[in-house]
Length: 385
Image (cartoon, rainbow, N blue to C red; front, side, top):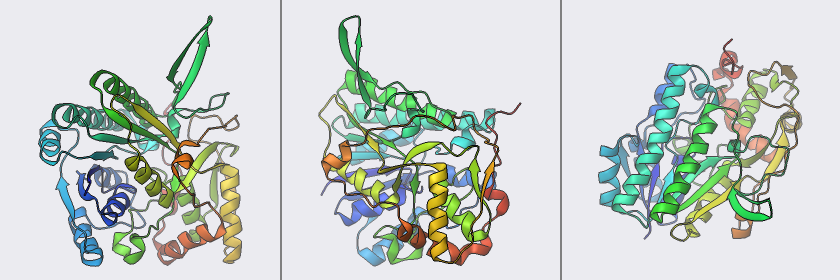
């Protein structure tokens, strides 16, 4: 039985991943300090679907599937918590989700930026040092983001790029240029992990993930209390989930600016598959593997049209509204990101079609009256002056 720790397991992706690993006969330990729930409360960003805390969720899961998940409440940014955890468990792998995940929150002001910076960098730094000291062969699986790359005017390679300069060549990390402080902390994570992989012989996989959508996994379909915490608000809700909730509530789909912003997207079920594949294909000591983790590439306008077409099948009228972009980003740009690594490992994607969108809507529509127009519209401006 392999031994895995999920850091940040109360989150949108952490809890579904814990269940998947448990059902694949891993020994699973989960960790969270509920920082995201505190930020959600502080910013009036209530989830449309919010599961119970981890202890209760693990009990529900065990009653249904007969697999145990060990729950630990603690702060990954605190070395006094992380060190004994790693020393005791000696994990085969640690999946690191324990970061403040919202770009808008990181841009609200100095206090929010400080929280983002301190939590995200210290969580990664403490994990690295706990592994160095107590479990140096542990495989670190870090959830990065495609947002690290920005929108360069050249193809985005899969983590690395070969540079030729003055007749000499070398392989480097692909240049990063993030559009938010949150994404910048992810760049710093990558740099930290690569430094310690080189100097301390660590084994690291960094997954550059695109925006995730969806709500269902094989395990969560068994009981609504096992569903992930599902946000539609402007701070924690990803764009597809937000568009679906806006459509159900009769709110025009908020297309920022021209709507040409193009990114790579994937279904939550594919996120689970990708991380499981990464765990099954660990790097060598001293190696940093990087995968671009997405399955399809769309502009915001294309996403809005996909949601609109699905709504037509359900006789739900939908309006699209271009609004001033609260973010500082290119709205029309070149974007071609490579993403073959996970497919080469065996990923068979679940692509976004009307059936997939309608299935998500089936769960959202029963909570239609709980959707807040205020939360579904932009509340954070990237520039405050």
